[in-house]
Structure formats: structure tokens, C-alpha cells
Amino acid sequence: MTLTPLNIVLFGVVALLGVGLYGLLITRNLIKVVMVLQILIKAVILALVLAGKLGGNTGLGQSTAATVIVADTIVAVVGLALAVQVRRRFGTLDVPKISTLRG
Amino acid sequence: MESIQYGLFMLGAIFCAYRAIVAKRILTATIYLACISALTSAVLYLLGAAQVAVMELSVGAGLVTVLLVYALSVVGDDAMDPASVIPKPLAFALVGLTAVVFGAMAYPVIPAYFERGSLTLAVSLWQTRVLDVWIQIALIFSGVLGVLGLLSEKVPGKKEEVES
Image (cartoon, rainbow over all chains, first blue to last red; front, side):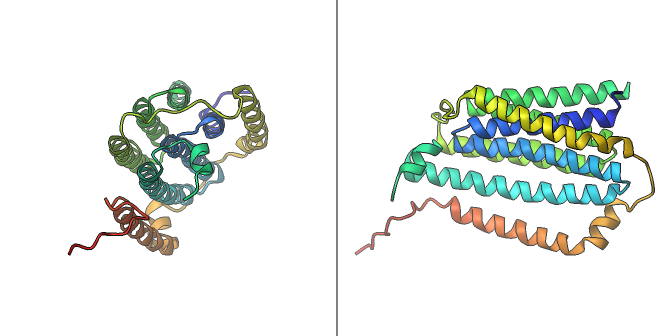
């Protein structure tokens, strides 16, 4: 097995996805959940550009990555705004506590 | 030499991602997230996606970091990450299994790599995917409107008092 640059990026993408999934499983803070989603999205952006390069259609891969960056930013903005409102209303950012509170 | 550059940037990004997740203080994790963005941009640039790299650097390391710091300033100093509900060894095993399966599925794609002519980013974005671009513009506008509503000072669920 040779370590070409594309192999290295592929292993990096898999590792970033793994770290992101691990973070998603162990994180309880709402703001940190948004951050972990950002890590996962970065792995996806790299994977899209890599797939475009591998498939010979670099423009399509890059334009899809640009779309993902825009959608990811909106997700981050709305997620953070929701976290701020949840903190104001419930007084906590702990996901299990929020899910057990009513009203 | 090129492989070393890719390896260093990817290892740095993975290390920062791990540190961002295990960091107790959210502000520290925010700094690590900005570092991941910068290192990802470097890898994107090396892959030949210079425009996407610039977007990622400006949005990921700039805008999102500023938003996170703003959110932390509103939330206050008690933004600490509590201990996990799921046992960490179980989470680690699950994620390791997923990563191994995903890697085994994706790795055979690499030998099929070949370079051939393709559309440029500008042609792909502004001609073949122009509808997507308009949808993105609408998405950004609706996102801004949503944030204006969500960040308002009015506490939800409380009725406004009528001044007599």
C-alpha cells in the first residue's frame, strides 16, 4: 500500500469523520454539538473535493463543496441562535436536562 | 515532499479535532475549530480547489468563529461541557468500527483515479448549477431573517405588558 497524497486525504477524511462521530456521541453541551457538526462538515467538504478529483469532474465536486459550506454556515448560525434562546429560557445548555424539561 | 505536506496538514487537523472535542472549556474548543478550518483550507488548496479553500477559510475560520465567540459571550462563563452519558469506551468502539467499515468501502476507489478534462468551477456553478446558486441566496436571506428573530431580546412565552 503506497501513501499517495490522495490516500492520505482519504484516511484523513475517515479519521475526521470518526473523531466527529465520537464527539457527537459524548458531547452534551448544545454549543459544542454545533461545533462537532462543523468538524463533520469539514470532513464532508474534503471528501466532496476528493471525489470530484477522483471522478475527473473537479468543477462539480468543488461547486457541491461550496454549496455545503453555505448550508453549513446557515446551520451553524441558526443552531447557535437556538442555543442562545434555549439558554435564556431553560437556564442550561445540557441536552439531557433540556429534553426532560416541559413548558 | 507533497505527501509530507498532505500528511502534516491532515494530522494537524485530526489532532485539533480531537482536542476540540475533549476540551472542557468551549472557548478553547472554538480556537481549535478555527485551526481545523485553516488546516482544511490548506489541504483544499493543495488539492487544487483554491476558491473553495478561500471560502472555507473566510467562512469557517472567520465567520463561524466570530459567531461562536458571540454566542459564548451571551451564554456566559458557565458554558462547560458536562460528562458524557454514553461510556467513552463504547463510543470509541462504535466509532472505530464505523471508520474501519467506511475506510474499507472507500479505499478501493483510489486506484481508479485518473485525470481528465472537466468543467471549471465557474462554469459548473454559474451555468449547470445556477438554480442551486439562487436557492443558496434565498437560504442565506432566510437564515439572516431567522437569526434576527431568534436573537431578539424578547423572551419567548412571556406576554408583553401593556403600559397604561
